Amino acid sequence: MTLMQEYRIFADYHTHTYYSHGKGSPRDNVLSAIERGLDLIAVSEHGPGHFTFGVRGKKLEKLNREMEELRREFEGRIAVQRGLELNVTGFGKTDCPENRDDYDVIILGYHKSVPPFNKHALRIWGESLFGIKNDPHRNAEAILAAAESCRANIISHPNLYLKVDIPYMAECCRQMGILLEVNSARVTLSEEEIRAICAAGCRLVIGSDAHTPERVGDFSLASEAVTKADAWEFVSNAVRI
Ligand SMILES: [Zn+2]
Ligand SMILES: [Zn+2]
Image (cartoon, rainbow, N blue to C red; front, side):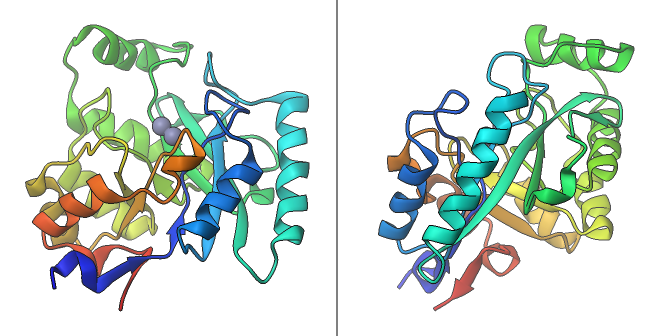
C-alpha cells in the first residue's frame, strides 16, 4: 500500500460552477461529491472583484439562496457549504463582501483579472502579466495582510501568477490558522516548498479547483505532490484510513 492509499480526502472546499466560468450547476457539484464519497462540498465562486468571472450583486444572492436550499436538501447525506474565492485587490486589500460571516469558508487567491486600483496592485499585476519580477517576500506580505483583513480560511494556489516567499507565508499562516492549498488543477508548490510548509508547522488543504462537476473531488495531482513531499499528516482535509 502506498502512503497515498492510507489517506482519504473527505472534503472539497474549492469548486466552481456556471455562476462564474465553470460548466455545471451547484447541484451537479454536490451530486458529484456524493458520488466521490466526500463528506463535505463547498461551492466557492470567484469573488466580485474578479473582472471577468466574479460573481456579484443579484447573481451572488441567487447563488447563496441556491446553496441554502441544497444544504437543506442534502442534510444527512453530505455537508454543503457556502464558500467564496476572494481576490487580492491590492496590498492588504480584498473584494470581501460585507456579509463575510454568512460564508462557511473564505478562500483568498491572487488572480490576474483584477483591475489594479492602487500602486501595489499595479506592481503585482505587472509581474503576473508581464513577468516583471517583484519581491516574493513583499508579495507574501501583501497577500497575508489581505488574508488577515478578510479573515481567510485558505490561501489558494500560492505562487500562481505571482511568486511568494513560501517559508515566510507558511510561518505567518501557522500563526494565523490559515491553510495553504495544494491545488489539484495545477500544483503551484514545489516538493521543497511543501516540505518547508510542514517544517513551519503550517497546515495544508487539498482543493480540486474543479470547473466541471466531473472534476469535483479529483485530487490526483495534489495527492501525488503531497505523497512526494511526505506531507499527508499535514493535510487538514485528509484522514488516515
Ligand atoms: Zn483561483
Ligand atoms: Zn478557483
